[in-house]
Image (cartoon, rainbow, N blue to C red):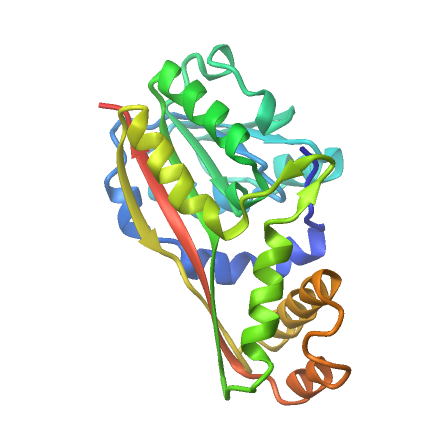
Amino acid sequence: MTGEFSESWLGLREPADAQARAADLVEMLPKPVHVIRDLGCGTGSMARWLAPQLATPQHWILADLDPKLLHYATSHVRLPEVSVEGALSDVTALTAADLDGTDLVTCSALLDLLTEAEIDSLVATLASARVTALFTLSVAGEVSLDPVRPEDAAVAGAFDEHQRRVVDGRRLLGPDAPAYAAQAFEKAGATVVTRPSVWQLGPQLPELTAEWLRGWVSAAQEQRPEVGGDGYLAARLERLPSASVGHVDLLAIFG
């Protein structure tokens, strides 16, 4: 599975990600947590957010398919008593042997890029290894804008269709991923807790809000070119709306 994120986009969204994640799920993690494997680590933002909340020492295995992102991540997670290694690997190829000695598997903004079969395989691997999972910021298909425009609902619907598109024969789960993953973990015998992790965007975050709008509308129009019309994005960018963008955080614990 290939990634869809650039270093600049990941850097732009990191503060909003940190603000949105459900911190109370961290408090529920079975202790101790010393070895953490971060799937699709990107620039390492998950480690920068989570590591300061956990007891030390820690060892992070940062896994990603993009060697440039992996190099950045391993160079930018610098915390006392936290060691880091990089693993150039695909989340869909994870095995129970890879998780030997691992206390926690994490990911951020990843589940919605997977298929049903890929989530089933990932859950089966985690169940076999009996490793806790903390999967954050999966797209939930919930967007609200203020002020409202009449085109909003059509754009949102087309975006969700795009998130569920077929890529190289793989039908992505998109906003269906959080519920599907929760059900799969429960079937595998895990205790599952989910929390909303909502981005709050708007004029107070102009760069991120504008870039999110461009990506949101672009994906919607790639799916349905007619949605929004020519002036929708320009009007939204001229006067940035307040935006609530829904995500879901999921904690799965194998007792």
